[in-house]
Amino acid sequence: MPMRIDIISAIPELLRSPLSHSIMQRAQDKGLVEINIINLREYGLGPHRQIDDYQYGGGAGMVMMIEPLFKCIDALKAEREYEHIIYMTPDGDLLNQALSNRLSISGNIMILCGHYKGIDDRLREHVITMEVSIGEYVLSGGELAAAVLVDSVARLIPGVLNDSTSALFDSFQDDLIAPPVYTRPEEFNGWSVPKILLSGHDKNILDWRSEQSLERTMKRKNDLKGD
Ligand code: 6GU
Image (cartoon, rainbow, N blue to C red; front, side, top):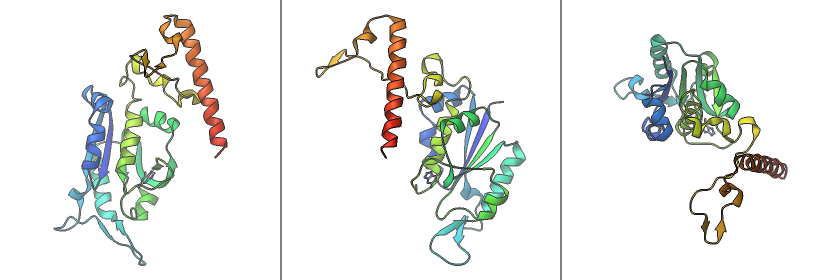
C-alpha cells in the first residue's frame, strides 16, 4: 500500500496545482504516494456549509469550528490508520530536512490547513498530533505551507527519485550545501564554466564538488553568524 497523504482545506484549489506537476505528479502516477485533497466545506454546518464562527470572549477574526473539522477527520480515520495528524500553523515546530526525512518513511499522514485566527483549540489539545510551521513569517492560510511540506516529504519516499535526481545529494542532507551546477553553453557573456567540469576526470570532479560543498557550507554558517 502506498503512503497516503490527506490534506483538509477550505480552499482546495490552492493545493491542486503545486501537487500535480513534475516530481509530485510522477510520484503519484508511479503509485508511490496517494495525495488526496478534501474540501472542508463538504463537512460545513447548515445550508451555508459554515466552517468558521466568531470567537468566544470577543475579538476580531473568525475561528475554524470544531465540528466540521472533527467530522472530516473522523470520516478519514474510519477509512484507514494515520500515523500523524498535522496542523499547519505559524506557531508550530519549524520544518527542516530531518522532519521531512522522518515523515517520508512514516505511515499515512493527515494534514490540516488553518485559516483566519486558527482552529478551535480543543482540536489542538485532543486530536492534532503534530504542529508544523514552514518559517518565521505569517501566511494567509496553511495551504501553501502544506504544499511545501508535502513536496519535501513526497520526493523522499523510496522510489520517487531516480539515481540522477537522488535526494542524497540535496543541500541539507549531511548538513552540506549542494555544489554549483552548470549546463550549456560553456561560455556565456564572457562567463565560463569551471574548466574542471569539462575535463572528463571523474575523481577530480568529485573532489572539486566536495570542496565547493564545504566552502559554501562554511560561508553560509559565517553569513548566519553575521545576522
Ligand atoms: Cl504552517 N501557516 C501559516 N498560516 N503561516 C505560516 C506557516 C503555516 N508557516 C509559516 N508561516
